[in-house]
Amino acid sequence: MTDPPPGPADCSSPLLTRRREQPIFSCKAHVFHIDPKTKRSWIPASASAVSVSFFYDSTRNLHRIISVEGTKVRRVGIITVEGTKVRRAAIISVEGIKAVINSTITPNMTFTKTSQKFGQWSDVRANTVYGLGFGTEAELNKFIEKFQEIKEATRHAPAGSAPNGTSSTPTTSTNASPVIARAVKMDQVDSYLPPPPAGELDPKQAGALHQRSHSLSGLQQQPSESPKHELKGGASPAAAAVGPSPAASSSEAQLKYENDRLKLALAQSSANAKKWEVELTTLKTNNARLTAALQESTANVEEWKLQLQSYKEENGRLRSRVLELEAGRGGDTADLSRELHQLRLRADKLEAEGKRKDEENRKLAAGQPDPAAAKAQEESMKVGRLWSRRTKQLRGQLSRLQDQLEMALSAQESQHKVLDTLNMQLRG
Image (cartoon, rainbow, N blue to C red):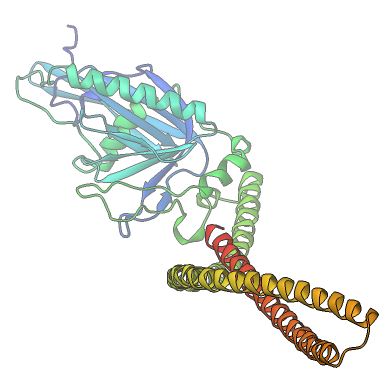
């Protein structure tokens, strides 16, 4: 009699009926869990880079992400008889092996790339947030592509059901017994996930994980701040392994080096901050000075405008005064010119009369002396002397009038020069 296929009552998980299934996709990564208390830091879940694989549960039509850490597995077969039916079950005894990831992919699950080599996703059913640190960005991108591909497949796939027609939910670490849950995990990956050797952990890869700060989405509500990628208690991932190893020593040395480098960067940042504060103070002082200078310049511009207006008004007054002076000086100059012309004519007439008298005197002196003629000559000489004095007086008056005329013309010319200078200043 052939044994019937195991039903849903054989084990708490139908994955036990799908032994040695091949993973859809596998990669190496460091696994981290979010700190359940603070929700702000990472706790290393693996001592080194472990295999992280995508599996398909054909019984329940589910996709899972599973990763384990350890080496020893022992299987125990159990046969039960119920009437005429024989039931078989496989229970796996795990020694030194722990499951670091057991996550069921749902359509609303999102994988977030938080840095160049680190990503995370939230599993509400497992009540945790998983973080993966990869050696290269290319590996992270491949994982993201596969995650999106499988998520789309789960979105379009029909809901799974148990063989008896009742709907079933995936068994996680929160609703199954520890032994059966571990057996389910190891039953899928025991034959094709060899334990990574201790020397396979790259110190640079381990150290790079602690250089990243990540924004972690909460399980039901996203926290206000992004938790930093740090190790709980300051321990490195290698410190979680049993016993010291060269990889652990290298990881600790790398962590110390990174810590010293971060301290140096912090000190340099503090020094730069002080320098920036001094520069900011200097800029504020210069800004205040420039503002004061600008205000002073504005006030000076207003003052210059007022001065220009006053200069224009003064120029107008001076123009009017010059026109008045030109009009007044023009009349005086004409009068002086006419008087000067009359004086010149009178002087010429007197001079001609004097010459005529002198000629008569010479003629009389040449003839015989006559008392009457002598008397007439004497009177004529007196008149000639009087005309000479009068002529000299007129010539002196003429000279004074000519000097006054020249002074008036000079004053008028100087006023014209002043007006021309003012006009040039106003135009400039």
